[in-house]
Amino acid sequence: MKRFILLSMTLLFTLLLAGCGSGELENTLDWETQNFKATTQEEADFAVEDMEGKVWLADFIFTSCNTVCPPMTRNMAQIQDQLQEKDIEAEIVSFSVDPTVDSPDELKEFGNKHGVDYSNWTFVTGYTQEEIQNFAQESFKAPVQKTEGNDQVTHGTSFYLVGKDGNVLKKYRGDTDVPYEQIIEDVKTAAN
Picture 1 (cartoon, rainbow, N blue to C red):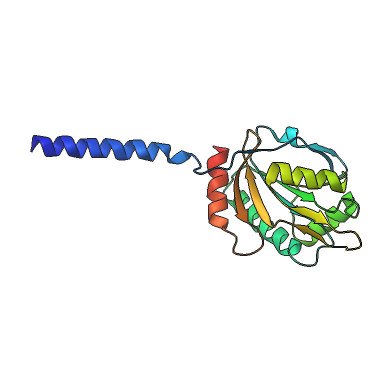
Picture 2 (tube, one colour):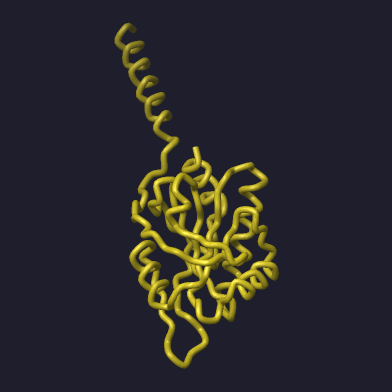
């Protein structure tokens, strides 16, 4: 009987310790984001280094996109609503992959069309095509390619969770079958 009690207590202690570690994200990517300067939809300066100490979600879109960008933006707006409902602090940054077309005004009009609340969501442009292609690839392992003579840009459709230290922690589907609950839970964990 004494042995059974000792074994039971050891098992209980092990379970308690395992429960304590559940406040951290598992299998994180830990991709370091490079600093990147841009202009917001309000024509203000933006730099990735200004996001240090904040948890944020990122994606790559463009305003004349006729396929995935509108649903991605609507999906991110749903995430924004859920974060606000649950009082979870996080920023959202949408990087234009077509900066020669996407002026701050174009981005603002696009955001307005898709129900964006700008209190914690920033759209950015104001860099070269080469700069956004390099940044997306180096920081997010995301493809971005604009072919000459084509008004559409090939780009990834993922949403990315970036931690307070500026590292990309997680990557999620952003166009279809979006794992809303998982994203909200992960943002909450990263924000604590």
